[in-house]
Length: 495
Image (cartoon, rainbow, N blue to C red; front, side, top):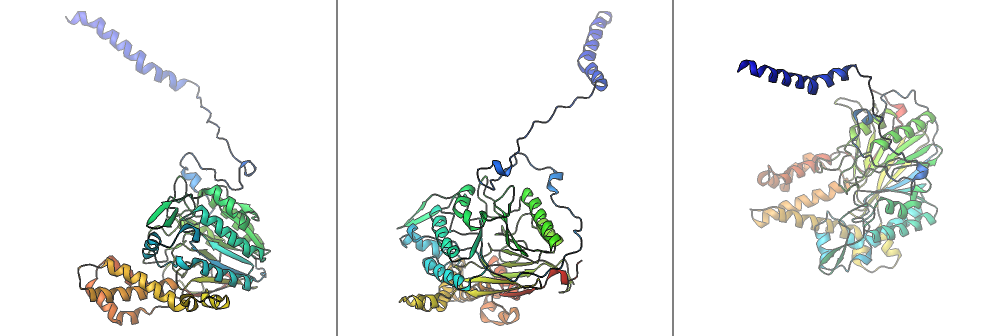
């Protein structure tokens, strides 16, 4: 038996060598070959169907590709006298055409569940604002995104007509998209008790509608977003940044894409070498500015973007999205003095949330910046144009009552399992605080804690999410959020 099995075992052994070992031995000594990578077609600016059509990568970027910015020191800054520049900022207009609603039940449900937007008086607020802009005649009007309610094409088109009237008065208008504006699946009209989905716009449609408001006059474009560089004068440039995510679908939070980040550095480096001030403007926030709104507000790669801006001594970044008037200087760590440089961020409140604020920025000859907010004077506009509506003629009182009523009712409905009279006290305190918080008014944390309303919150609602919001608004409100004097970064210490 054993002798008969020897040939069979030998045959199996030889077969094993032939199948498994010989190919490996041959492969070790064979000449190395390399399959050439498949060529990926590239697209130049001239090839595109419109000047900044995104070229979306088909694969995830490698670690080396993610290193989009250099960490090298750019060299000594150039001191240069600046052309005095005056700019008006507004954000989160959420424009809504009167043609998309009959102001019936569906519309009322929209505003009852909003954050205090005065959509019913959008036409009057906009007309009053436009007249103030034209009278002030700044060097530019800058709108930092969320131009429309929910990206409705009809709203985009009507707003573009309104912006054309401002440009016809000799004022340059610069726009960027917000997260509501492109590929928004909730583009809606409101008639009777029905909300109906209507046509929105994609990124190319956005450009087609707003191309005359910054894009046509741009000095340069980012390769992978709707960002562009606008040279306002010889010493002031604006980086109008598309921070939104709308492909393959619309998202609420934002990011700066890798190609845009590389392009930003090229722009900053060029300006830095010439002593030119660059002001970046985006919709999403660069820093975490709110203890109340912490999700989907800050640019995803904000730390990398912030480091890039600070490397080139960028004085300030302007944003929106929060609907809260906020101003915050970036501080690298505890104990850092006021004489140490850090980029400032100025967040504009929504133009249609009381008190309907916009911002005025002056770039001074010495390179410092002066900023303050201003209320749209709807009452003055109403009186001038012969309006008889008492709500418009005393707009400050009406708008104050309006936002308190909307927020108080919402808060009352959120609080459960306690007597109505206590719910009312809690809701009124929350609404008053909310009104001041959104407007960026100073709030005394110590004094607020003494109020009876807070004592009730502490007694009945601590701990809870709503109580944390109350605490957050009180703490955030301790800062100055309505004005800022920003020194020329060259005059500060650099760590």
